[in-house]
Length: 175
Image (cartoon, rainbow, N blue to C red; front, side, top):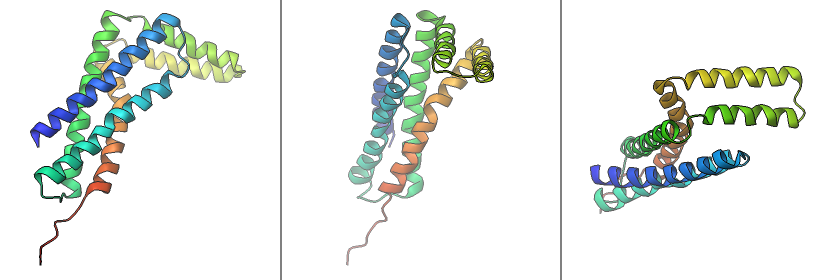
């Protein structure tokens, strides 16, 4: 199980981190954040598809074609945790070393976008308040880590849950 978890977790982490670094680099240099969220979550789904592959691989090759929901969920959870941790670590390096003013640029973009899309003054004030709260969390590495895990881990958990439900299979006795 360890080999499968490590292999698929590392590959998933590499995939999602590569997409993240490339898209952040593009957004940061161009100032264009539009569509980045869609690309980011699509990359997460692509990477976390390896949870399904990893659980299926374990079930079929190492567990005689059967697996309980709990075991499938545990394997998927470990793969998701490894991939998410790689993503968080890569973001920490990227953020602190290459894009330290990312939050300011992103905040400016979000507020400008709200204004351009006809948001009311109250909606803009609410958006500013929300962005200020996020920026405050970004003042410490712990805040950056927590927000980054909150960005990716729920996707991994959802894929893990779905994969465990789909792939669970009881052992059939031969007659």
